[in-house]
Length: 470
Ligand SMILES: [Fe+2]
Image (tube, rainbow, N blue to C red; front, top):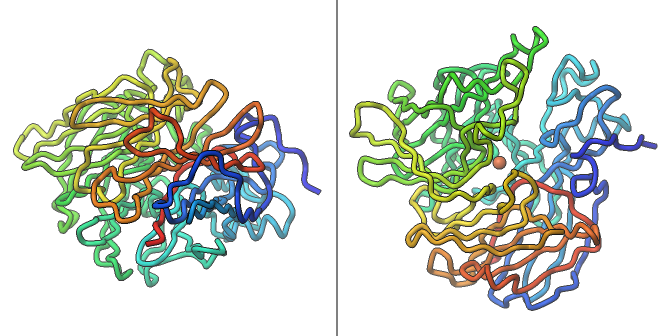
């Protein structure tokens, strides 16, 4: 029997693991699922099988990956969830307890797993070259069977990649390429980045290393039709610092922000670095090329509390820790190598998404979840940004509800960018149950068209993808 989970905020309430695998063939639906919405919404997130080892802290990013799959067709919604059968999951399930240290810190892990792959596959799930890939940024992708959610194993691109792969690859709608990178690509704490391209047939067509100005955590990146951009924020990593008793990750704003810009077909020596003062982001909305300018719209902040500063303190609210929608621009014709910033909105928001078919080419319509409260807390507002008119529309889920990432699902036969729906999970706190909400993408303020009621609570998670049936 496993021990109770400790009283950690990321192991209780909305975040508590569900700890089971379910099949619900036909969920109760309030409202009406549109007849021209057909496909499967996959969502990934952490669901730790066991409580952390005695004395180990828990980190939300560290739980075993669990895939939630909602198949929507003919007005019906089915739901299935499965853990990813990673090597970590398998050895810990066999042992009946956690064996790895927090974030695979070898100083706290069990000696028996020193040579076992650490790969939670818990962050995102994407679809490329016919494969469904569960991703985390510290390891290889894990292939998942579309219907059964069975784990098929890790994907090494013909044995050519053995290091970390980002959870946020980009998909070029023109070529069908998957463009991706890895950080700490030559070992934990290294400043090496790996830049790779996998074509639509699954062949690795690009794979090169380049050096960042310093080792840092790089959660997302930018790809346009012409360039790939590696954003290095001063969220630094240092094994030496950790060995000396300091934090492995630290916020060092004095180091500034550096974007490595490389032509998509370039080589490592072609990288050009652009700079600005300290900024941070987890996620980008979209990026594109406009003449000599490269633009990236992001949910960015001036500082982060994700890791302590070198003095051990966290950045303060006054440092600007809440992410807001902003545009970062690099002009290739400008020899100052500076990055300019335009603030597009002042509302705290995260999980920015556009129609995936508009990645790398630019967009008009974007969606995110956010809060009208001053703090960066639970997200209970769904947001639609129209970048052509500058208009922001919102729909409030209500004070007792919290929403996850909203993913665009194209209408069957859609030809326009925003011709479709949004799907998102919402947590009803008083009922302690989850719901799958379906919105018309351009009319979110009217509320959901349909609400599929889950018989249980699905924990807060990270990212997902809608894979159309047609
Ligand atoms: Fe992410």
